[in-house]
Length: 548
Ligand code: ATP
Ligand code: MG
Image (cartoon, rainbow, N blue to C red):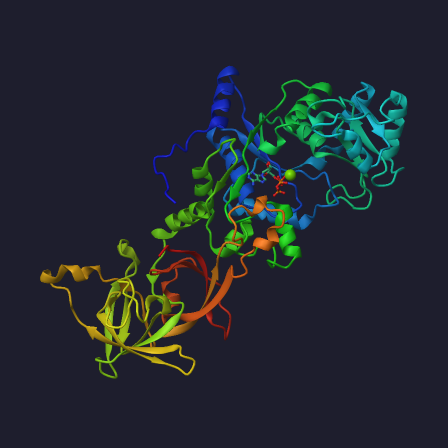
């Protein structure tokens, strides 16, 4: 992955449209909205939408409303409303005035539905959901009129009133727009505008209503009521725009909002959609919405991502209409960039193997003073201790390797901030696993004549006596396949090893190196300290690892 530092990120096609509109209308109060359905938690895709909508309002001195699109009580929950508010605040964004709810406008939607009925542009239909689907036809088959399509206006008014008054059962009846069952655009084949949902109490309006408008009917009217100028959504709503404009025109509005679409965010080896996340939770593949492997805002927070890193990522990926998949390494790049100069560095060993430096005396102790950060002086210095017995990473040793990057028998490496060591002998246990490695240390092998040796790699380590047992939670992408969103059976592609817990060692004084919960373990990556628990090992979550 290569980040293009020269990429133009301060403009995109939506900004250009807005700038044209501002020029056309001398004074235009730009207003956008972010309209989540409270049927799940926010994810990184929502962060992109939030970033776009809130930034437009910031850039053009406008406003951005947070509006809950709460027109389907059978799927919505108050806990989702609360988590959405919490996540937006955590991302550092402020919505305009009070929070809006589509349910604030139920009375107005009803009034407009009546207007359409009275104009002969909507009718009450008794077909069932399945029948409606069958009658609708397909891309290659024209739709068929419902036998109830030509009901008299008076009859429709009465039936719609009865719907509102709770006369009918869920799913037995609905209100549809009367447009064209032969339209090439399927969405225009008499879309449903209202349905009966009695089984669930609405979290805002309680039992006041038992009929609820569909997304298509409520969304455009909500935008109109709130004087939204640019209604920005994802490309799967491109066809809905025709209906959006049809409704606004036929209910008799002026100065209508306009819809613009951008492509959804997809990230390789991950799924983003709420529906799919719910499936993973149901199948117990992840524990909940905030599993650190999920790209939900709460998952990213638990993993250690910062709001700035997420917003910088959204800024970098930009806004286009083309379907695309972003590499996970882009997101990782922005957290590394954010933490790079904000955290101290220390050493830890995740997969320890014992080294005995046999040419050092038994009680050898050398205190080494090193900086807490190679570039940031104000972070101060720390003291590390070299002793006869140390741990290094198992991966840094290979018995027979000639790989210059590793320690091998008769091969040399340099201990970070300390001496060179050469492996001489290994001791294996009964299971033929290496128990310890005997090494010889050299205080200095680099001299001007022997520059080649400078290529020797430098490895991290901790002295056994000066380290403490530490737990490390390591996560990988949830999916082994690049495009799980496109697979029929995504479960098949889950990486069962995407979550690992390692017991290793870190410097004894590690807690004193933590800044705002973060640390960089040299050569490994960035980590976040978990809540400390009495009598439990210190635990770190790995946010992102360095590429080896
Ligand atoms: P999901 O597919 O995850 O259920 P949704 O579109 O149903 O998402 P909403 O709560 O309706 O979720 O989304 C609120 C806003 O966020 C919408 O404007 C929607 O277009 C946008 N949004 C949702 N997912 C993405 C995504 N992956 N990338 C960009 N924007 C998104
Ligand atoms: Mg939606």
